[in-house]
Length: 107
Length: 123
Image 1 (cartoon, chains in turn red, yellow):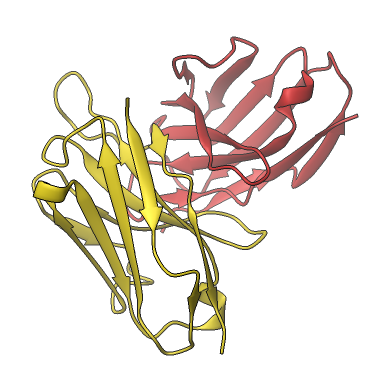
Image 2 (image 1 turned 90 degrees about the vertical axis):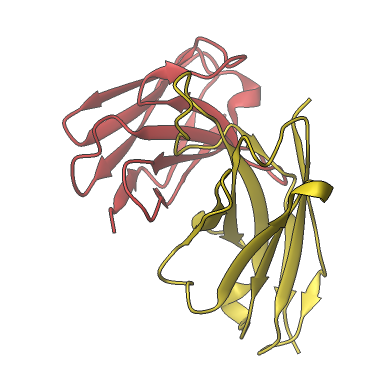
């Protein structure tokens, strides 16, 4: 199975700041990487697919990038509604696997 | 609009079988694949299996011996059955939809999720 190592496990940042979350794939997944946001008590929502494509309706302050097997989610100009958990997911090979998640707190 | 709604018992006893239903609207089960994903309480996400638009199924090998997914297209429903439940199967179970490309290829991420159903395994 492809392992997705996500970091950090948690981070705290202030309004207006920029944060980055990383996922390292255990093998090449050829950009087949999605990012989700999950707010408390809610189901995950798709933010980014194919590493850098923004899902319809997602604010442009969210962006994705890649470098080899390392994938990043960047959130610019943090807003209060950005607080929540973030997960990466590889869709290159079955079984589909997720990162362990990052809890983002807005100070 | 696209909706997925999970339903099922909130409490299952150890060693018993879990039966969940995902009722969809706004799209056809013969056009899109539906996946099951679960989330143990306070933990990450695990892909369980899928019902493809053509009726084929595939399962996470970690669960394959206990898991069965089926559907009733006339009722727009996908079913999950998992036997021999244990306490570490406690969590929230989601059904999700995978989008299709303009070429009709099912993509491996999830654009719509149900609200989830919480399942507790306890005696």
